[in-house]
Length: 386
Image (cartoon, rainbow, N blue to C red; front, top):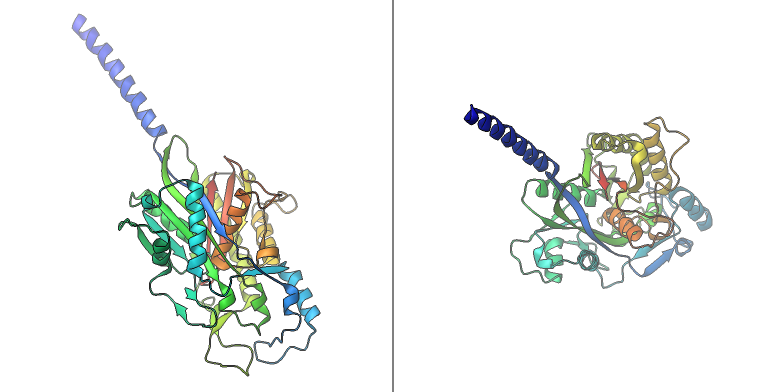
């Protein structure tokens, strides 16, 4: 009888111990992907809208546009919100400014560069040197950045991705998957572009483009709560949309027509983005498990102020919120920096964290969203908890 009682007590406390141990494991089971440092590089050369006052512009059908410069700039500013943009100095390339941004992110994260498992570099045109439109992609730009950082570790994988303007966010999504599978613990994400080298100065759309670089260090962290990368969505549409952004000849018929520049069908992009981006943002938000009212900031690709504003309004409309959109939900820096493609999201994020956007703050515990749209056509979004 005594032996039976002892056995019963033993079994009772054994299962209680196992239960407590299991619960502890469940609580400690989150492997999170978190940003531990950011950095960016904003070129020093400021080009104001007034610089285009005396520029000859041609239409897509190569006819000269007779409107006065003041009228063109006024309309351009009303649509895009851009007052000025930044261009790199003559001797600089995309990999150069990426290196500067990466260096700052590493310093911010307070890590040893040798501990980086991967470098993922998002861009679209490679290194384009001043006065030469030929793209230089050998070696790839991530390898150039690894060389610049003097990283000796041969196991630090360096590769580039081409995904249009959403490239940096897509690099983040890829990096998250590597961390979740245990293939990497610490990754450097870079987005950099020098669009001033590939734009057609005779095309009014060229005024939207700019140069810049942004970077972030992300790493795997175990925690008793879910934080960092929470959820995402991504899509690619190509049946009709593949060539909304493309490489094409100059609008000016009097110069070399064999040279190709960045071109876009602005109206089609606007219509596509307005319909599809809010839906992709909603999908990411719904997957997160959080309520839309928990969202504190939307760090959206600085494509076009009017378009970005319309997309965010449509996003909230999908949740039945038409007139009560949170004030200051969408920070903007396109008015001063222009559209630097893959660099806009990481640059804006870094600007906010470093206090360069005085009206906006992101605090620990805040739920934010990264979102972008661009060539492909590609769209992606990430819900992230600080």
